[in-house]
Length: 226
Image (cartoon, rainbow, N blue to C red):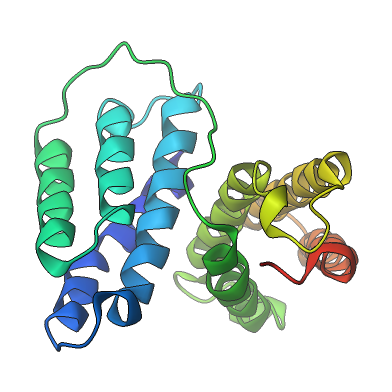
């Protein structure tokens, strides 16, 4: 839970900059790419946090944050986007308890996740994992564990998006790949955290290698997102 919440905080902090980008002018559809990418990540993280069995500081606010994130994804101009971000800030500051049951639903587009989010996360993980010395530098284990946790969430949130892939008739296989990718991402997260308790770097490296193999297999079948 802590890694998911830290990722939520990280991506939430990007929203003000994303809104500033909109203020530079141009068509909303052209200038809002980063905003929509970050909003999609936040929606998926809020869904995962709401469904987690672990306690967390964002859990009470999660249902409202999902609604706010959806409103942000549906924004068609800078004013409506800013309003949605303002609502999200308010719900973070004063979370209201909710009895709403949250389940995974198709709320985000697959393309930004696969073309921007996943490559960014995997690139950073590889860069920080080139050797044990680099990984154990201050803060790097936290970054890698957080990135891997987010990959797990993206995998879960992508299960319902097979219609956006190049093989929309392969739903069962797509879900299988998503589940495998999520499980292996979680393995990387756990192996990274284990390093702080004397875990072996070789075990971490093996977990990362298995994740990379799954990426290649899935890309070969489903890489051409619509």
